Image (cartoon, rainbow, N blue to C red):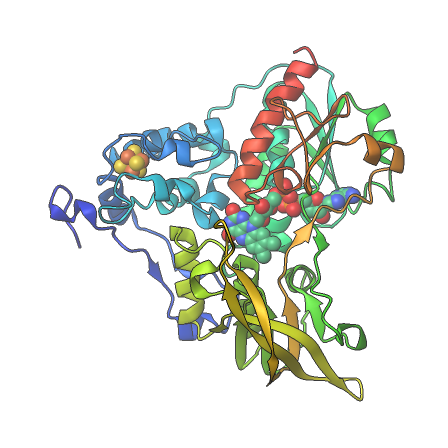
Length: 457
Ligand SMILES: Cc1cc2nc3c(=O)[nH]c(=O)nc-3n(C[C@H](O)[C@H](O)[C@H](O)COP(=O)(O)OP(=O)(O)OC[C@H]3O[C@@H](n4cnc5c(N)ncnc54)[C@H](O)[C@@H]3O)c2cc1C
Ligand code: SF4
């Protein structure tokens, strides 16, 4: 073990993980959290310079809570965390930790393990006992939020502290949004999610489960019944590749549907050989989940090169890639599928071309161009398309869709988180381009402030 104050200040105390050959057979969490001795050693490396803070979308006071645990004061640490982040245990476990890429040690050794330190503080805290809550008296104001993901949970937390009641409408029967129905359990246990959701709800917010806005209740009714509405509906509309043959079989599925079904307890039969199309986190989660469902082989086919994959070069991207490879998943680069081969109703495999990467005139990202003179075939029992998703706007009536200003595929909001429709706010994946939990939290914080101002409180 390293000793604080030695040359090893530049080296991270690596967190332990379960053996990949063992962990790939079950859905138990694979990361083994720091002990108190370990977290102190790691926290002692921090210089308190604060360079990491702008790297965090929610601008959490990182040096503050890292110092607190270095001093052995976990309770101070959890209170610093809760000022800016009502989901510290979830983020301590699966945050994309872009703050670590901004740490002063990142390019001269190893960044301080900010995320693991946060997990230690949160996991070892009892929020009801340790978090000092000052809650304003009930103002009588009520806000409706669509979706029980991190964006809505964050506004529910901050508005509850300001005496505003939030009703969250969630079409599924579970809380958490993509944290629950996207991120697999081996990375984030349901206990972690429930702990933080329960704490937020204990302050006065409510989740109305199994209620789909646009179907079970109209968006306009929400606007009439509440003082403001928050859209935290995420991105749940699958983007498909359009590859021929997909329509002939139910053995080709979008990753969002696949991961959701597994998360909700369905035993999806993936067979022995699984192909995942894509190259990002969702592709890796889909492949790793397939192994845990019994696949003997899972391979990820991506249209660009190794160095072009999403999040390449970030510490989070590299860590997840290493963990995926360690579990025996193979990556095949520069591939375009053009047919899913189905014979007598049975999926046989996939035909694909290899791509050449063509540099763009005037710079820009090299473009994958299929070399169609050579065709390849690979056998598969199940194919998963992890090719992204967009906002599902089916909850909005046409006349409001027309009024809602967009920024490409995302809802446009102002500095208060308000959309182009008066009294309607938005945040999270439906709004921001980064599409991670901490950005949803940052959006939720902004919207909670904006709503408080809008309500004249
Ligand atoms: C496979 C996968 C892995 C990921 N891994 C990570 C990770 O490791 N770290 C990280 O930071 N981020 C990760 N993300 C991204 C992260 O989960 C999202 O950025 C975040 O959850 C977005 O939060 P949100 O509140 O905007 O929406 P969501 O979490 O998507 O929640 C939206 C909720 O709205 C509900 N909803 C939608 N429409 C309606 C309606 N009409 N009526 C009622 N309810 C509705 C949905 O059911 C859903 O529960 C991952 C995402 C996926 C898909
Ligand atoms: S940048 Fe690194 S060393 Fe500086 S405060 Fe943040 S965690 Fe500590």
